[in-house]
Length: 208
Ligand code: SF4
Image (cartoon, rainbow, N blue to C red; front, side, top):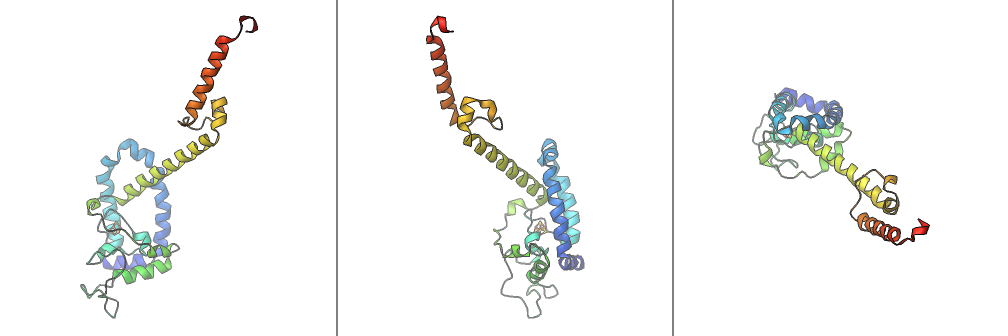
């Protein structure tokens, strides 16, 4: 609905706060989503997303939401689907050259972004629309991708710690039990172990 869409742009800061609270909840729920299966959740979640965002933003379900970078003005409502600013056909009154009764979504985007704390994200160049994602849930995609990214970062940190203490791991693996032993530490440890075995085997009976 056009009037609601314009309302959302006028209250872009409120919707930005709302989204900033909603996103961590979705990421937090990732273990539940994974146990239920993202594919199984896709249809029902996409249906809810379509209803909510359709009402508020005239969402076209492109599957790669950029509302937080476009002042809460959905760029897919541009008749040319431009994702990186207006074309050269904006009328003098700020309306669209294709739909004269509609204000250019990018003028709305600029005004909405000015009201937002993260409004400078409008300067970020967006990649071309991936049509294969059309109809899919952006919410689920963001939850899955951010959770995966967090897991990868955590894993990298644990390995960095283990690498940093490779000497300690070789002497006493229990000293750094936070991660699987890095490959680089194994030969060193195996060499030490074989030395110990040889020394033990060659030790004179009387000294044991
Ligand atoms: S950018 Fe895409 S997902 Fe976001 S509101 Fe527009 S059509 Fe919907």
